[in-house]
Length: 105
Image (cartoon, rainbow, N blue to C red; front, side, top):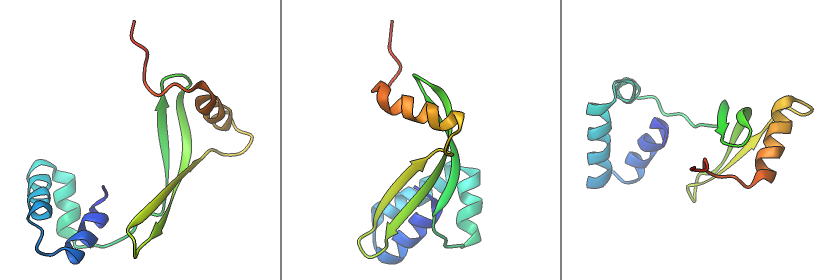
């Protein structure tokens, strides 16, 4: 969960002990989280580029777009690969492979 999501959640649920405890633990245990939390910035994760490590096809570079319904706190995450690229071919093969975890010998 991104820092911005937690910050918005604290605004919606200011009396949540569970949320307060989670933030305290994350702040103490993660220097990067502590820096981001201290900055006070509130943003929204909308798009990013990621590398997905798939067990059948290997690494796949994908664009990650997030569609948010703010009132209902619902998010739809869409992963796409650049059209006509090696990553698109690997992405399609990953979908068709049906492999969700590495096979054990």
